[in-house]
Image 1: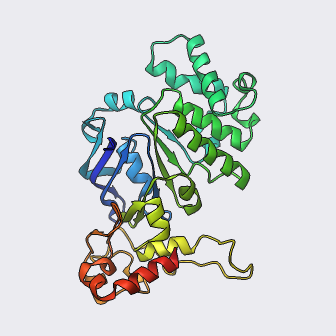
Image 2: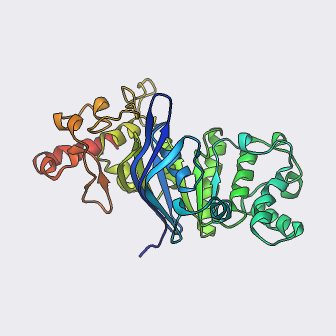
Image 3: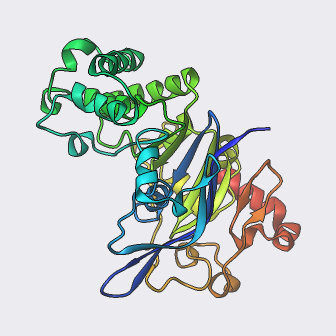
Length: 343
């Protein structure tokens, strides 16, 4: 049986604004096993990054507050730890690769020094030992001329090399969980493929689990073992990668998959999009948050929030009234056809 390294349970996070309280994360649960990659996917503003930053203890305390839930990491509830205890974990047992390396790298400091900073902070090591550790990591991630590039500043490196530096910074302390927030967004297609291959290779060579946060279904298809689909602050579908791509059951998941350009379609085919806009999370709807944008919505969808209904595939569930056992009993074959048509 797989061992959970991170277990987020019923997380609720709000942000106080002038207009009211934004319910950014609403009863979200997910887990990560050792040496596993999970993907959390959804459009911008759905709560992906807030969920993960809360799990790391990184959310702003000025206007954000955790209203409920637990974040269990190696047996400890992150939400109950002091700032000092969290600092001992961050960069050491938990690390993060941010979306834009040029924003997060210090422009006034050579990248080699930035890589060794976390190692020196968390380990009783000399600068020479930290440098050797950094060189080994850079060789592991196939950075060309690592000794020379360690002396350079961020602006002297290409986008792909800067992203490799961010990965090296995240890996130098051998973290148990590596969070990757849109790690390929700022890169061109060929460099994206290299970074994806690199992260897959790293998972095979190390004991690190990966939590991938993205809106790019192509990236999760190449990396994730399991996928959580998130919409309007809630998890609306979960399953292993094969199930989500070949037997999706939630209309929002269908929309995400339809929006990916396909090579087997005619070049003049219009790109698909999901009509409408996400709901206002200051006053979220009492029913399904996707109902206003769903072409399969029923009367009950706008009145009551659907629970997460278990589906036949292993650990597959979807929060949609179309997945209610009574609906499937009457329309099961039609529903399966819809899911496979959108896959």
